[in-house]
Length: 113
Image (tube, rainbow, N blue to C red; front, side):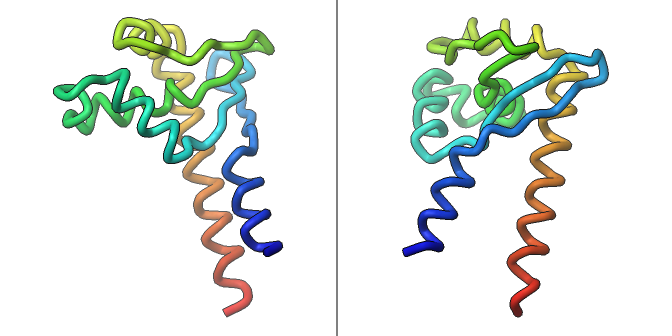
């Protein structure tokens, strides 16, 4: 039971990172429901476009920029505006943070084996 609580807690954990412009970004790992909602926002054509979906999922995960809440996007235009607002610096910082967190999780999983 404790393991499942730990998994759920980490799934909803807010991560924080500073981007190349010095902005404080808060985001969380997308859950299955978040992914489903992103597919709905993207529509049937863009949901099949992996490069677009990869960038959109990074932007869709953002909760705050410099302490100011970012509302969830509800259409393609809002995702594009958020991608533009984050820019390469913001998207790269989020992607790098996720990569580091994933590699740390992998190491934690291997410690007991």
